Length: 484
Ligand code: CAO
Image 1 (spheres, helix red, strand yellow):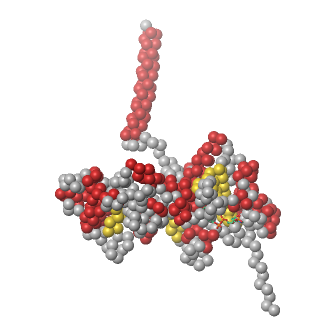
Image 2: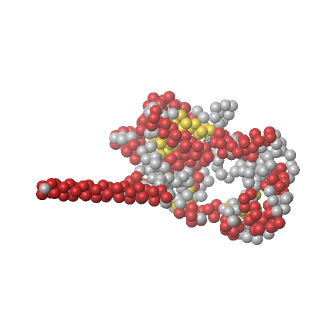
Image 3: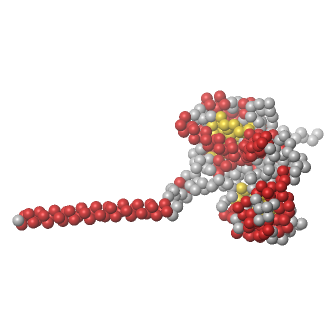
């Protein structure tokens, strides 16, 4: 009996123990689940951004080496973005000359131009004469070391250097070879192309400007920088595919194609013309017949919500005292109240979007009467309270001085050894685990030694031989003849 009761006691003790352990585990599980649920409820269900500084967490393109043969704007825009994402961009430049833009539009004597410095940040520069036999040897070694070659020479120039796709792939089958050209295969493929040529050939110029004026090019560099952006996407896609195939590939972006991609809504309108006039274009309301092609639409809004640029207080002196005003249908009542036309809310000529289309000129004139009594920022403040979409026309001065753009790293100030501090556009693409790495542009050939030593691991003797060969230095200028 005593033994039994001892046993029973022990049993009930161990049962109580395991019961409490089970209770504890259950409590833990519930606590964890509640924590998870609470986190989800707080909108924190997604993985949190890394709390480590980028130096520890690594940047998005850390380890990717880019052999950068780009010049002027389109190619450099692409490689600068990749450098901001953490790639090691090695810019190859002609000894003594470098990228032609170093000397173009100079504002500080003897210093690299802003044209160059704002397109080549966070890169390293090596000078190599790509037509010199020793230069070709160095390039072949760099091809073996790098992941991507990017170029935007005139058609055929890379091949003339001996860097055909076949040659590159024999040396390094994993290499992605990315090019910007003016046109894709077709009648114009051999043409040299600059920004405005691309804007014209890509359908932007014919659809920009006012109906009664000539075609216009835009200030935004959609041909150059726009194509550079497209190329960057092509490169990261090819790198991603290489993870599966182990093979590099060619990436080609034609500037004409890039511009057309950005102007696609105008090709949409071209097709809509077959079904009748484009009712959201103000020319419809003005009774002007449509021709065979998408017309220039002035400042009409591209979507189905009519919009226009309107004068604001001070427009007589300030060329940027304007605001873009969109008469979005859901806020029509608020607009009518603001501009002192409450009767337009119910007037059948103005109450519905289709009724307003033929009267847009009259409507925007009435809104402008109101906007000219306020500054563009006052209009912005008032309209935002009513969810009316408006956009102040910001000058480059205002953008350069805007603190919020500095705070997000979209506008960055960097130091430069020969020009001093300058502003540049940082990375407009924000990655939570990979803050942009925005550094100054390199001086011509600043990293030649470093790259030969650390990337190619050449010996002192090899470097000395290269230096005397003339492959990395500008040819000596002929000595002036002695005066007789
Ligand atoms: N060492 C030796 N030679 C070099 C060199 C180096 N490191 N880097 C370049 N060169 C040579 C090239 O091999 C080429 O020589 P060849 O014509 O004898 O083969 C020469 O320099 C110039 O190349 P290019 O024809 O590309 O330059 P360009 O100034 O005459 O033309 C541009 C410029 C932009 C019109 C042309 O490159 C082009 O059409 N590129 C494609 C489209 C493009 O990107 N346009 C945007 C430009 S930004 O507005």
